[in-house]
Amino acid sequence: MLTIEQFGSSTGKIVSSKTSQSILSLSSDEVLEQFKLFGLLFFRGFGVTYEEMREFSEKFSSKFVRDPARQIVGSFDDFIQMVDNGMDEVLPHCENAVSPFRPDIVWFCCGVPAAQDGETLFWDGIKVWEKLSEPVKELFLSKKVKFRFIFPVDNWKLFFGRETTIADVKQIFDKIKEVNYHFQEDDSIYFEYTCSAVVKTKFDNQYAFANSIIIWHKEQDDFEKEAFDIQETDLVVVFEDGSLIPNAVINEIKEVMDKLTGVISWQTGDIVMIDNSRFLHGRRAFQDNRRQIFSHLSYLKS
Image 1 (cartoon, one colour):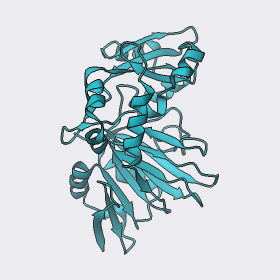
Image 2 (cartoon, one colour):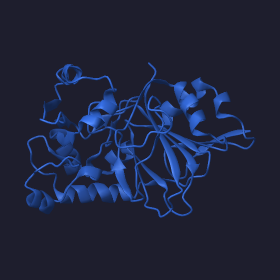
Image 3 (cartoon, helix red, strand yellow):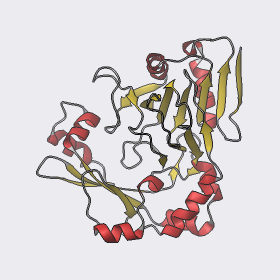
Image 4 (cartoon, helix red, strand yellow):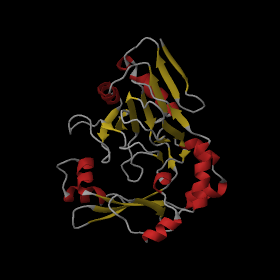
């Protein structure tokens, strides 16, 4: 028996099976319809493995992408990865929102939940935007943000493909007006991406505060100490003109998001699909190194 219910107090939906039904037997058209409406579908009771996650996701996806920071599961040519290394808290973000290559769907599947804590958290960017004050809304509508980071050669080779050359990368970036870049002596890329922190959702064209500002924002004191130097592992976000995003603005965003937090308390075999143009996600810290959450990033079929 299949049931579709409200996912707690969030705008997402939980799809559950009491009969160990295979997730592959679900109607792709019906799943897609629900996904477009609600932006987050959480499936429980289907006993999904990461191999089944890949097969299920292929029903909806035209292309898969890798996160260079995540461990690959299986062969190099597979696009299943483990979630972020470590057991620390992960702050709200959207996948690849620091670049023009934001995927449409984020997939997570639980192999082994943490014995305690380690929940995945999520926020509906539409609701976040609605709750922000008018001055903050006006600020982000009038000023774009700029993400600045170093793209190591191993990372861009993983992201674009092993056979990608510097000439290939230049051909890609030169066509994107929001990107400013240059290659460094070690073939790493100094990269700047300018965009709005407020995006239009893919399916209903609503404003959503769906971005990666919180996770990459630095306090003003940190900027003064570092004098804006960017090291290989650093990523920083500022306004397009180079000015800092005020701490008071960040604090307001955090306060709003704290009241809108959705929680996924994992069980083995759970899977979730998330609209990456609408929802942000993160996680709570945990202390169990057995935890296994698989991830997958894809673009939706047209």
